[in-house]
Image (cartoon, rainbow, N blue to C red):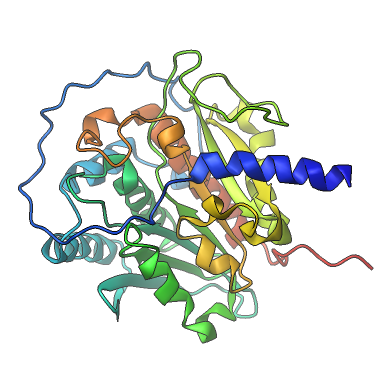
Length: 345
């Protein structure tokens, strides 16, 4: 009984971490370009990354260039079409063959690079590309899109055992519509071993107490500052969550941001706010998925605001977050183990 009480307390923390996301409906409206006219405080930078395998090292310049090129509201039909043009053009530069998958009120982008072991299930990387009205969404979620494009650049031509899939979801902010449409293609899910979904991975704060927490947290936070990533996963697929934990054990060698992993029991039924991003539809199809996030409104004051602009991005933290995703994805792609928790015998 005490074990379940502990799990429930842990799940309640995750509610606050990923709450208030992607469930608000907005009226369609046009808007002018959003420019960087809002004054913001420049966060104190983290130390630069130490040496990483040069063939898999993310480019800070390319990450920030994607953020800048997506510095416009991505809410209306026209704006989201413009975004798709940018994403597909970039993917083609890296040798991918993206496909547009239409659904009611939206269009997802899908691409894959086949692995060397056809029997090994694929790993999918995902992020939504739309925004709420009146926000250019630099962190929410141009940051996730930018990391995906770096994954595409670094791993697109790298032979790995597993197949690598990319999914750019539309209409997350309208209620996870894109990811819900994606998982309805059940035949494709049969060969999917796990999904890594990013939603806000580029904001950090370095003042003591700037990171908010719910009361009674049953675990020790990695910091009293907002300088770490959170990875939320379901307890039925712990190996996928643990892939980030294993990376964390070697963090001192790379100087990457700390990672806090949060396994959620019962597919979030008792903690519905943990289901409000694009990982959730995968959980309910029995596919392991994790949400990688900077904790959104528990950290950044720019959440869903016009002030969510490139100037608020922390380049060192963003680069580190991207490197963590690339490193974890690479490790998963090169393994053939099942990524679901094995039943007790």
